[in-house]
Image 1 (cartoon, rainbow, N blue to C red):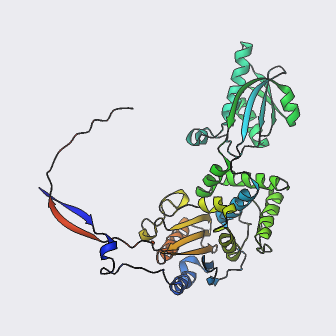
Image 2 (image 1 turned 60 degrees about the vertical axis):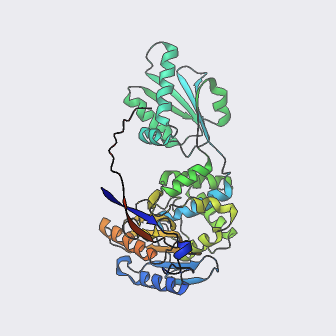
Image 3 (image 1 turned 90 degrees about the vertical axis):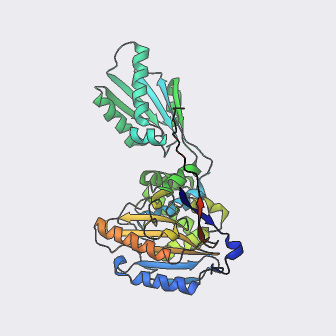
Amino acid sequence: MKKVISVAISALFCGVFLGAPTSAFDPVWAAKVFNNLALDPDLRNPSVILIDASTKEVLFESNSSAARKPASTLKILAGVAVAKYLDPTMRFQTSLSIATKENAVVIQGDLDPWATFSAYNAKRLGQTSLKYLAYRGHAELEAQAGTPIKKMTIYYNGIYDSEATNMKVYLKSKKVVVNVKPVTAMEAQNLVSEPVMNSISPSVLQMTHYFMKWSNNVLSERMARLAAKSAGYSPNTDGIRAVFKKVLTDLEIDSSKLVVKDGSGLSHKNRLSAKLLGEVLLRVHEDPEYKLVVDSLPSGGINGTLNERFIKTAPQAIGLVRAKTGTLKGTVTLAGYVEAQDREYIFVVIADRLSRSYTASKVARNTLDRYLGKIALPLLPIVPVQEISTPVQETSTVETLTAP
């Protein structure tokens, strides 16, 4: 029986004759594409900017100075602040110990942003499980006492107050009355009698990759607060606002229209302009200090929140768009880089006047992806395929799968 085998013919030998493209996509064409994008009714008069990364020239803009809702593209500023003020190799520890006081444990930490009270996330992602710490603390007290413990105290430092409260609620569901007491770092250390366990987070680098690629709101918020604290500001929303403005000032970018209500983009009250975000992406593009930010962006059709994008709408753009996504009700945003042969464009699109429906958001995302597909082009020419009919011996094989 014959089967058809596809044989690739090298473009190095026949690219010229087959019309393989050899020069960068024309910036004039890219500007026309983005002009049509800005006028498309599916995007409802978005805020848009397109910049040539090599020449730093603004090729197209529409409403680019308007203060709009960034949604999760605000995480780009969180990433920049983290890259500026936190050591990428830094890790955070959380420990559990038996206390010197009766029926009490001590939990000490570094405000680990990776810690979670979700048992599902802890198992799935290998995060520090605060629920397990609570369970283990109670179990250790019972093991030492040799009898059920119905009342206990948790002294804590360096974990979030909300997490201490969650511990109390969780143990209450197990019929244990818990008193949670915040203490200073020195008090916590003086209360330690016997260490039980210690958990260490991934590095700042790894956690930044995760919250940027998968748009994790909790992780982005916590790391933005840690960056604020490291920069000398309060680890709260005011501190996040201050550190964002500081990094923008350092990058010589006007932050007068920036409104920050969180470190994740989850609030509908956040505001920034496409021009501001475009300038940030331009400044960090080839700056080694901010390589972490660029490397953390999802890649279209491949990973992160872009893993399912472009596959059906613009398959020619798969792997050529690296960008941060953003979605709120009535808002779809995308900001990053698109490759067009030996040229790279920086783009920001903020469509925050959509209908507050899932359908409107989906249509806007698909429309945006199709326009990006019109300018995305790989550096190497597409290799033509010639089909050759070759006789192949038909065989039948049976594979036996064994457990490792």
